[in-house]
Length: 151
Ligand code: MN
Image (tube, rainbow, N blue to C red; front, side):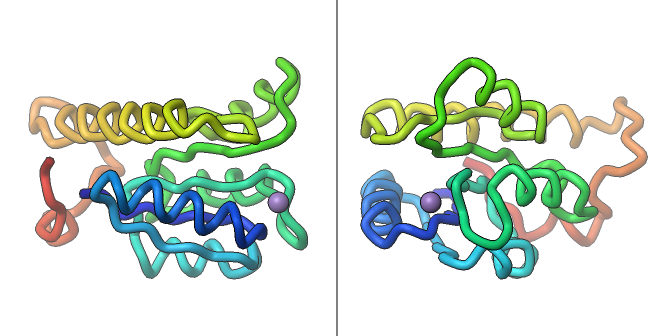
């Protein structure tokens, strides 16, 4: 089970994503107003963020950049979900700091596979970070790692 924050302004998409993630055993939480997304992410401490790109107020690209700059969230994997899907769009999304994107209308299979892959990659990265042989100055402090569940 993973905690997954969804940032999406479309109610039907929120329902679809939440249902899909819950069916895969995850714990989804949705934010509709992207101005609240960074605070919600800090509080929820997600294992993965899924964000729409076309959002009112704070765009998905700006949100991705803000998460990447945040002390507590900079390592959280981000999956963008977007109707823009040219190679140039993908470059901008990856350039902002997302690891993956899925285009709308989503393929349910591709959505689920991408979520699984990002969670798998990030748990493998975590294993590397936990290795004391690696000098990682910005790694989690001893008190911060305690609540995490290994899958
Ligand atoms: Mn939207």
